[in-house]
Image (tube, rainbow, N blue to C red; front, side, top):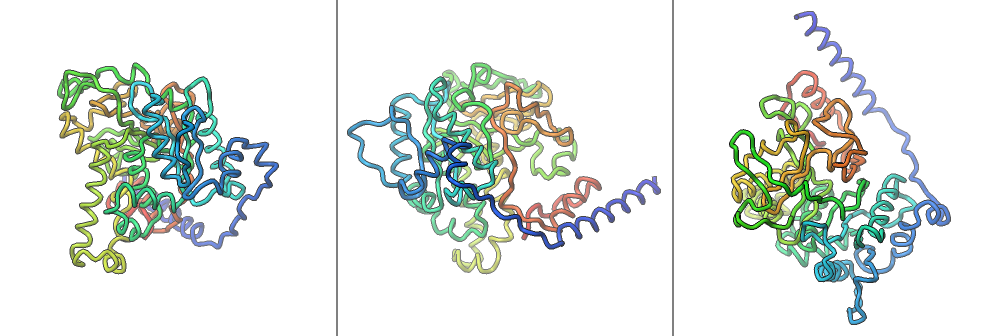
Length: 425
């Protein structure tokens, strides 16, 4: 046993040396891809038409709204916020919603610019796929919105004016993006997908009859269904769709060794919601509460708090990321329906959707299919009927960091370093 342990430690040391050399060496920065208009028009015709050509169509981003959603009496829209508000209104009026739900068929994404000739090809391909589904006549039309930074500012000012200063003070763009996806889903409604996601099915097919069937917690024998919650006698249409990104046995240390905070953790690289959902309201309330705690020693001064490095030291995964959305859902569904969170696991039932009132929790395969054998957690193939979307994991906000990589290695191999930061500081 001692010999095995010694060999294990030697292996760790060698890996750490390799990581140090690999992360520390000067990289030749690859030039950004640059394509001419003819190539983009041929390879990505919808992205060319609705992103490239429309880059000056309005303030705050670019968008596509189906012609049949428009009326001659509609006022002209000059900003992305005006267009999104109008699309949301039309989607509800025309019942252009995900079946079995009140979620409007509106796709939201956000990125830094519309210069798709300089984007990584995989990102352009993802947008092309979203637009293909938006314009597919056989699945119901959808609207598509690509929000730029000034468009996000419009939304924050309009929907959450009390958060504007806080969002400006956040040190990481990803934290602002995390809050944006919740605010846009909770204010406009629709489907949010990270720019590096590829839809595998039209969102118009994401909810089926089988996703709405009752299920039972095997430990408490409590039945849950679309009728669970405050109005137990009446089945509800879905108003929130969330997907699992980590599904582990809570009686083991597997989840934290893989870097997850909860054994069963939600993703937020994609979600879908009707406006004004309690879980998303809870997320925003928790965010405000945590920021208030951080600024209290500085008498509420956000600038002083930021200058002291307090906001930079806050883990974004906990403040605005997957841990934050998981906490909000866990709290709200416990309060509304008495849900035992670990009952959501798909490890014992083959992975099935679980309805808790108007909230549907998809199994891991829905938004995280095709995982490798290590850390599979029940994830099935990309071609499985449960697979709705693939996250391509570009990780553009993460930087290579020796400390983070050492912590990851220490957790995975040695089962130590549980509280070591997972993000660069």
